[in-house]
Image (cartoon, rainbow, N blue to C red; front, side, top):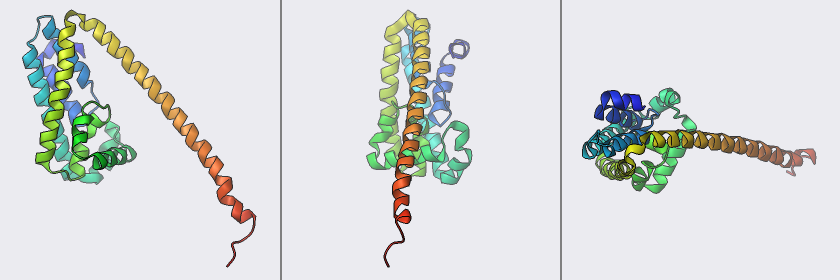
Length: 209
């Protein structure tokens, strides 16, 4: 990823943030941190890094919104698997958004999984675009502000940051795999425990009437 930013500069930062924002899994946060760290070491301008990242984030999410609004559920169900947006995951994200309202558009910026599909789900669920755009811009401003400030203050420690982020991602993946395995085990055990209880009336005889 650093190679992309080295080669294309601000455009590299914008490209990574943009594609992540409309649904393609990409390290958007890491790109902002790296670009801001380059600014802290004197290679980039921090205001330009933040500006291009903000513009890319809002634009990407808006494109995701249009995709969701025009394509709807059939499009998501057909192509979502290619970007890890399964029907089950879509239903969970949509339910969360419907329960929490527009404020989830802001919160989603800081949550892996929600961030990538924020615009698509908002469009599919029928949220008015002007409302989505307002909350989306607020969320993008906060998100970019947090990570660009952190990266800028890190300055010359960009290599250490990339290494730390890589270890964090590996740890997060390991925890997620363990959590998923535990959940699957729990669900299977629960189903096995419920099955005898459901079958017991049949073993005891037919119901009266």
